Length: 84
Length: 155
View 1 (tube, rainbow over the protein chains, first blue to last red):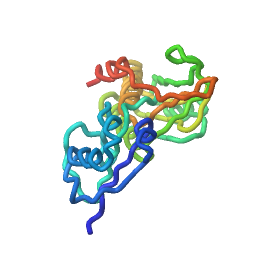
View 2 (cartoon, helix red, strand yellow; view 1 turned 180 degrees about the vertical axis):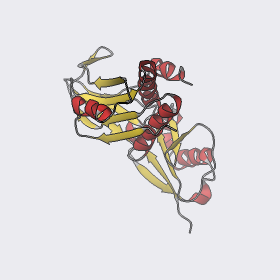
View 3 (cartoon, one colour; view 1 turned 90 degrees about the vertical axis):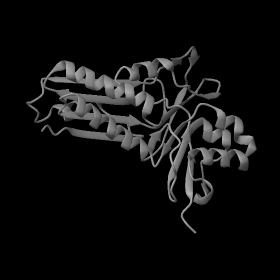
View 4 (cartoon, each protein chain N blue to C red; view 1 turned 30 degrees about the vertical axis):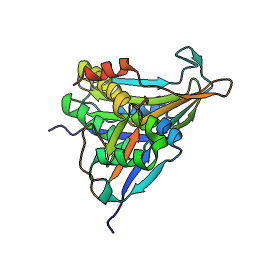
């Protein structure tokens, strides 16, 4: 068994989903697009929230493309940031 | 090769502007210019009264994004010192939120370096604000297009 991919949710998205993080077997989410598909299939009620405007980070670096995922990766999904 | 002293802090503690300014200036005879910005909590935002403000962040990523921003600024302008302090947790009107300070031999580099850090911080550092009004209802703030436009001028 390889390490899972960990997914973290923040701010409004975390509240809408009611979950702050979850683990997914790495074999079923080879890349970011597959991960989003997996989340919607596993939790159809999350679809509206996950279809909103979101930012994505892989291993704590922002990404805007569909990058490949490895076992042990940390993926974060969150609304556009509002600090400062 | 210039070595820039970078200091990044994220936490719930308040900061003292004099202490941060002194840290930019002490034993520093190279820099003739210091520019700093302080962001504070307002009691009115987008027409809504604000009773309190909660700041959430992504621990770990926040610090590394701020460190990278400071390094990018130091790579673009001759800055000898860069300090970024950002608070998280529960804040109230008039509380300080963020400090960005830089020192440089010359003023234009200091102005630009500080503006760059602040503008890009607003669109890339993983912080989120949730406001609570006097009646107890709370709302997550939406990102503003005007902030994106300001950050894009540095690309």
